[in-house]
Image (tube, rainbow, N blue to C red; front, side, top):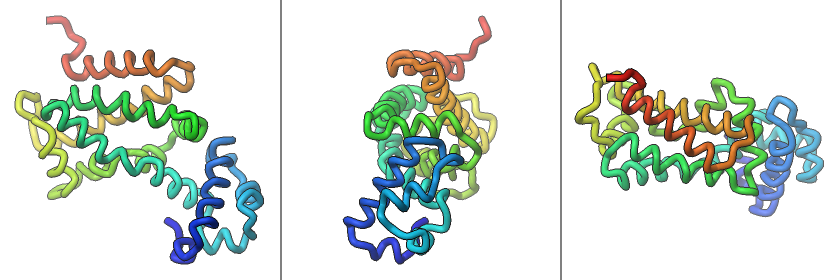
Length: 207
């Protein structure tokens, strides 16, 4: 996360630095991004950069946190709209999330993100409630349970609930990456997601 020095900057300087970061991280994936390009575009010295951020990864994940800050409430709202049905909630949530990702302003950034995902990126892009729901006596798990009706689900023990939530979220990210890689339209990507979700919901074995 940024240092206090960064937060003490004027709004103009912060905006300029974030715009430079957005341009560089939209140009290439994180591992190929250049701090030199960022500081040149932001018109700051290398020394100043390290007063604000530990490294380019620090800046990258801070920028990502700003882009995904609305996804938490969007997830809760989707479950609420679905009246507690987990799968219907994800069917509502996915098109909304995909629309944000495919927005012209950020689509190249997210394209690099999803085509080069690793463990940390997956963790950072996951909504807080899902990321931490596996912990015992956890606020996020209890919050999810307020919005999701688990009656009727084949959950053998309490630990199965966060496993199911994370399974669907992992499949969601995988489908977005597949959509970018195969250059699917949003409509095609949504259809593929819904098919995979139906397999999880209903199974694939014939009666």
